[in-house]
Length: 222
Image 1 (cartoon, rainbow, N blue to C red):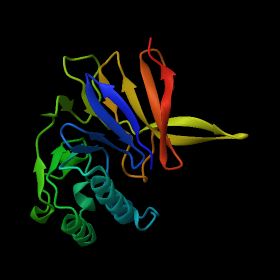
Image 2 (cartoon, one colour; image 1 turned 120 degrees about the vertical axis):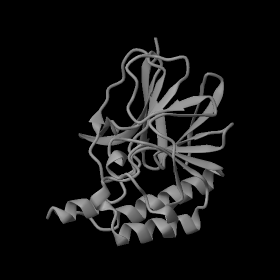
Image 3 (spheres, helix red, strand yellow; image 1 turned 135 degrees about the vertical axis):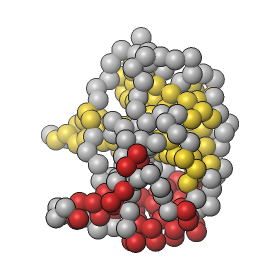
Image 4 (tube, rainbow, N blue to C red; image 1 turned 90 degrees about the vertical axis):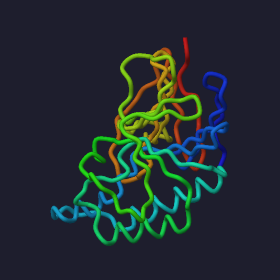
């Protein structure tokens, strides 16, 4: 699984096909928008939903942390989908994940997290508020509108890139590196999400995840 390597403000960053990024100096694995419990929330409202989404998400997270040899996980918002989605099944699955992966987890609150005012204590989540800084970067759920002194890492938008494949086109999750706003937007870590289509533009480049590798940059920086 080849990663894409880039430097931001002199710091080495790895974009991983697992839909995560890794900050080498801080040994931090960064992910966004896991939406744990979304399938359960859908079923409670009578909507059909695929089984096994949370299991796949959490197995992929633990494997990404192991492959990167991370020392901390930063979740840039929307760990859960809703307070109603945390049932016994979700509690048990996440507890099993924590048995495999005991790394510290810092949760930057996203719009969906605000509905779950308390998380199960056995999940061992450190909620750090709406903004957090680590390793020379700032973390917040929603992307910034203007550049700050420090680069910001965000989620929320679930960026996708339309990729041509023969006569068809498919949408691939993508990282967006916006040099004008000094903001890096991560793809949704959950595969059970809709996304916002992004196009390359001046001062912003995209890295798409396709066939277990990260392809890019797509676009250019003026």
